[in-house]
Image (cartoon, rainbow, N blue to C red; front, side):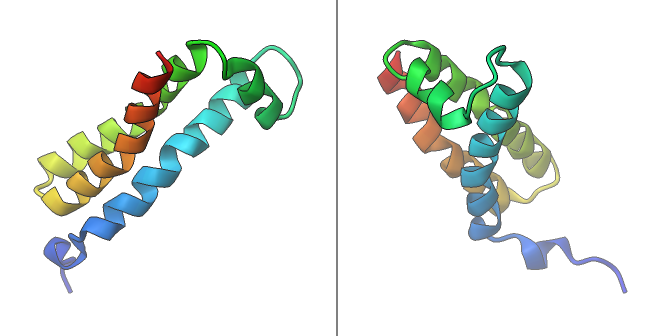
Amino acid sequence: MPFNQKKYNHFLIGLLPGLILPALFIWVYLERFYPIDMVVWDILGQLYPGALLGKLLLLSIMPDLIFVFVFYKSDSFKIASGFMIGAMPYLIGSFAMM
C-alpha cells in the first residue's frame, strides 16, 4: 500500500507545528546558549525592553522556513503555506521589537 502524500496535504497540518516550533526553538535556544541559570520567562523578561528579543524572534522562525522549503520541494504547498503563516506572528513581533 503506497503512501498517498496528497491525502495529508492540509493547511492545518502545517499551521499548528508552524506556531509551536518557533516557541520550542526559543526555549531550547535559551536553555542551551544563555549563560545565566534562570527560568526562561525571567530571561525573556530581561530581553524584552531591548532589541535582542526581536532578533531572537527573527532567529526562531528559521526552523519554520526550513520546513517551508522541504514541503515546497515535495509539492505539499498547503502544508508549506501553513508553516509560513505560522511564522508570521513571530516575524511581525520581531519587526515590532526592532
